[in-house]
Figure 1 (cartoon, rainbow, N blue to C red):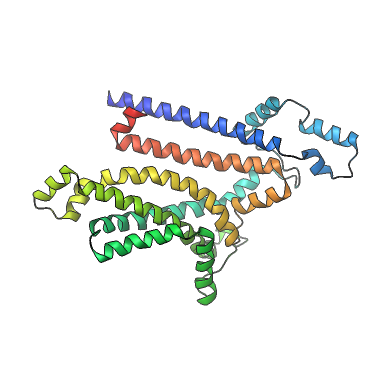
Figure 2 (cartoon, rainbow, N blue to C red; figure 1 turned 120 degrees about the vertical axis):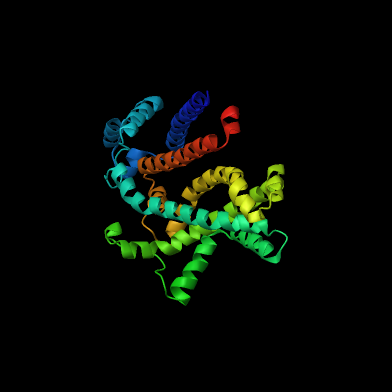
Length: 321
């Protein structure tokens, strides 16, 4: 019976995942088409004749209905074809995949670093919440939340690249990950900047969830058997304390995708975020549409994985969703 409930829960979340993808792609497609301007005019320039503009609109399918255009784009997107850039003529999918070799490792490494630091520190702050060191740890997390990520990135770059020239202030090797040493070195400061803000939020939730666990009856019973607070938490309380943290982690990773745009521009990383800002400035709407579709898919995929993890960890989630 439990296995059937798990399958039904996963099927529902999978249906919601694909429904959200289609709905978001339709909204993005429609909003971009409602923006002022003409794709054909942007490609040919202001000196183009009405005949050449009409011919290009027909070739690009702009003279068809909006629904027909979206359906055609969706079918190609399902097969991995996000179109051709109207300005550079490059394949959008190939360019996104190339830039993703910078953005995806940046997000993954920042998420791992944030989790490895924030959860132990949050639990430590909860165990010591009446002591000075626990209060100081909690205050540090508040500072990380309050400082804007672009400002913390500038401070980190100024400190470790200019004041103490230990690491590069920006850029990424042209050889990419084929030369892993310089590539990893160029990612240290951006990863730390992203992890700082995300880890501060996770630390606050880990602390609150752990304090709530310390006040439960089962925890008091475990303490009555002679276990220390740390031993009782490690044996009986970690799983319950991690459930709200995992839920917040999904939202934070979604936020991290947006924050990566800022960090890539602060540290001049040639990733998806930097490419998105350039294409918005150049009004390359087909490329912008493809980038937003990919980033939105990543956000929904993370949310789907978090929902599945919560459903497996907490049976109450399967019964209510």
